[in-house]
Each structure stands twice: as C-alpha cells, then as structure tokens.
Image: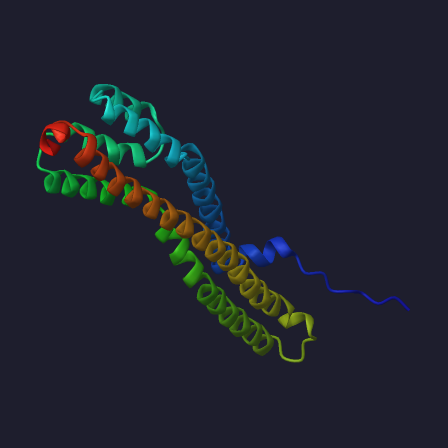
Amino acid sequence: MEHSAYQIDAIQVIRSSWVLVLMFILSIIVVAVAIERWFYFARTKLDSDKFLEQIKAYIIDEKYNDAIAFCKKSKGVIPIVVRTGMEERHLPRDEVAKLMEATMAEQKVNLQRYLNILGSIGSTAPFIGLFGTVLGIIKAFRDLAASAGGGPEIVMVGIAEALVATAGGLAVAIPAVLLYNYFTDKVKNITVEMDTVTRKTLVLLANYGEGAHARRK
C-alpha cells in the first residue's frame, strides 16, 4: 500500500504571507547597514597615539599649517576635531574648547548614522514575527472551517506560515541586535578616544602654543 505524503511548497508559503516578505526585506536592510558601517569604521580607523605625537611636534615647532594639512590627510573623525582646534587657535582657549566640542558632537552623529535602523529592526522584528504567527494560525482555522471533514493537510499551510513567521522574526532580530551592540560599542570607544585627544590637544595648545613661552616668562 502506498502512502501519499503531503508536500508543502515553501516558496508558496512565503509568497502567501506579507509578513514573511517584510522579514526578507528587513533582513536585506540589516545586511546593507552592517556592510556600510563596517566599511565606514574600517575606513576611519586611526592610531590616535601616533597621531597626537605628530600634532604635539607641530605645536611645539609652531608649524600650524603643517598640522592642519596633516589633519586633512589623516583618516577618521579625530583629525577633524583637532583641525578645528588648529584653525581656531587664535581664539581664547575656552572658545576653542567649545568649538572642538561642537565639532565632536557633529562627528558623533556620523558615527551613529544608521544604527537606529538596526536597533529598531532588532526590537520590532520579533513582534512582527509574532503577528505573522497569529495570522498563520487564523488562516489554518479558517481553512479548516471552510473544508469540513478535511484531513490535517488542510491546516498545514497555515501552521507552516505561522512557524516560519516566528522563525523569521527571530532570524532577523538576533543578528540586528548583535550588530547594533557591536557598532554601538565601537562608537562609544571612538567617542571616548575623541574626547581624550581633544582634551590633550587643548593642553598642548595652552602649554606649547603661540604665546605660551612668553606667558611663562
């Protein structure tokens, strides 16, 4: 005796649920943001200690134009902040500090760009998947009611849709949350590094900058 097995078309299950289509789109967004941010941080990586040593040498020798040119050709957000200090060095020190802090705030926005997308997807994807699960269960019972006396294969598509929606929500949310935490940690480290270099640059300008020798006499 032959037993016929009911085959579920996975493609058809995905197409029949707009929730699963949405999950697929969200997964593409997560991958795109992760790639963009990875290349951004790789492109802006900087050895701040060596950079600050060179800036200190320029300040001591009062070669500010060279320091500005060095900042322009250096990669990362830290040189942009230091360049502000070099270009506005003639102002009072507290004004220079405020301008550097403002530049630092602008660069922090660049560091955090698109991360809110990862955070939002990571927090909402499980609920979207749960919503798809509810819709799948409703579909299963509706199909069962429409086919009185039918076998279990009647509800299999709805049940499959429900389970896939749950798995899809988790499959999108988990990588999104992990990536969000990873990039947020990098932003935090770079922000601390940026603040440290800013404070050290201000101290260098105060002690070795223009007029510092005359003030000490």
